[in-house]
Figure 1 (cartoon, rainbow, N blue to C red):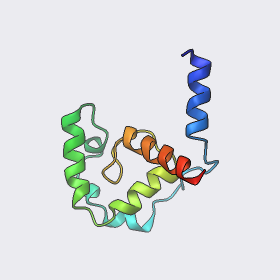
Figure 2 (cartoon, rainbow, N blue to C red):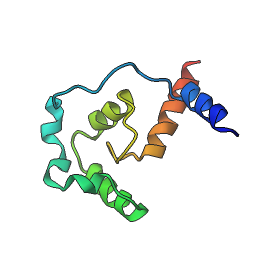
Figure 3 (tube, helix red, strand yellow):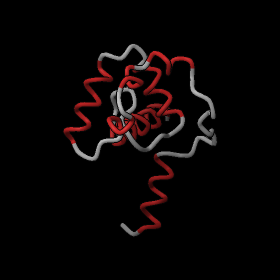
Figure 4 (tube, one colour):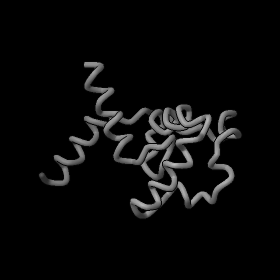
Length: 100
């Protein structure tokens, strides 16, 4: 598939939200377990790092809000609410397909 076709497919599967992430933090973020860890923990470069971030998220009281935030604002990098970039793309695709 050429670059143009790939981009068109990606845009169809993941249309932009036209919503910029809020400039300020959300109230639920103060309760996130991630606040006690280095930010790099949630932006791993390998599968071992992703597993570590997921373990932290697994115990987090705000993981649902965190995941929905990342999905709403199409955050492409890092582990949010226990989900990787690839998992969030799949969730968005599945939601879009279910809505049609």
